[in-house]
Image 1: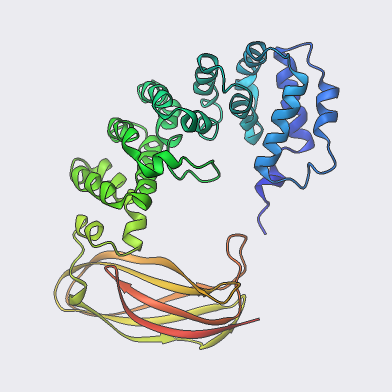
Image 2: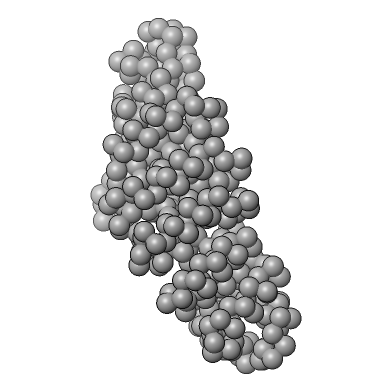
Length: 359
């Protein structure tokens, strides 16, 4: 099993190096006291973000009580702090600097060059969205692509791991000028953030996201990639307007037959092999997917869509074979019961079969 992130960072060695980086720019730093505060019995078992929060508090306990002085030390140390431990620097701002925007926001712009401030900016945006987005607009013009990326990534309505921004989920209008400005950015990381932000918007405001995607598509090859990535949730959901943007053919022109499962019963940990035929009446652009309806803990089914291919097919019949693993994963636990698998063509389910998953 792959090593967990929470076990890879905030180790005894990395915390010691972190403390050395602080002491380099603050000779009066009580490193033994800091390490003692860090060594709480429960620290090792904490999740990654909880370890970050604990580190932030330990910094606060050992740095000068003046926020300005503490921030000056952390600003100087930032280039020398590596790994996830650097998360504690922007988190220090979010935890102790909410009442001093003039110091805090420039510090976040600085810290993001070494480790992203995308989590730390969100309390400021939640407190005063209009004021916060003024800073984001300025960052969108910065010469450093990591700072420009913060302008988009930090205001994502549904950023993973981060606090929610319900005002932006309800009304993302303040975000749109940032996305418009950055969609042609020279950095792929920045453009990908734009796509992720627009995908977030599509989950709460699909009509708005579709309008933007329809307007952007065809402007350039790079912008088309943004639109495609931004539409991924809507494409998986079979949203017809999203499918139409990319010219997918009428699903009635494509049939699915002979869906066959190698096994009708398998155990958790096994691999299911399945095959089917698609029959194409005339040359068509096809997005081909399959869905697994997983049994959850309480017996309900949960649908997960997997892409097979997307390409143009000439008329004819084509046999497709795929495999689906039911190996336990950190992100998915399997439960016994009657599962289903379906074949999806251009957003439309065409065939379905059931099978048993056993312990």
